[in-house]
Length: 295
Image (cartoon, rainbow, N blue to C red; front, top):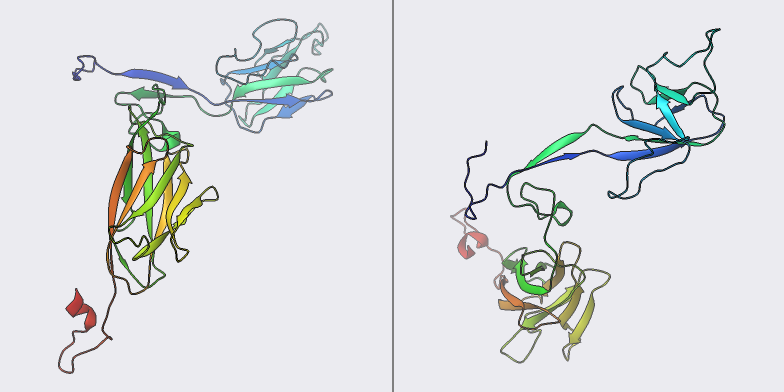
């Protein structure tokens, strides 16, 4: 028994079983059919003429009884009549013993039949900590997500690097992640990125550039450089832009990102950009060069 006591006073330990279901159709006239996936002899498998294949977790899996239900027999154990031949009035099938996924019928099919089965081994999962959604790359140790995404409440902004060489080609990616009150990531929301300045010249140090096909320039300065860009969050709740420093411009650039629906949901980051103002040199009597003196 798990003896851990959580702050809530409740022991959190859940046990889940899972399997991967699949279905295929065997055409009329077939005496055997080979499934796309190999299955074991004891694997759950259902053959029915009704084709009651399932499409959602709430539907029952396959047809359990009725006139269209085929009966599973052991290999070589089909029902026979007095002369030893198979009883073709029965609807029967069996799995080939080599576990290849080959299904044998006791007669040539007079109708299309649907085969529903587990396409892979069944497994289990024990959930004993906060469960987060792996589809959005949030998971810690779980794979189920019970909370419902609500309105945006928080925004976190980061950059791929805090310093950059200002040669006009190097760039920094700025990534904003949007969360709700439960820290679920929120997709399909517009984020506005903008350069923050106190000089009056928005793009004195550099400019912004959209990174996705949905991104667009929001505002330009007098020189035609973008200092404000709109991007839409992905299914991971992330939106991203590029910051490109102007060549030979040094200083600290502040970048702001905020949710377009509520300007109070925002974050700031800073990028330091530098440039070598002297020509490279090597001392005659030393192995040190420019980089050694500047770093």
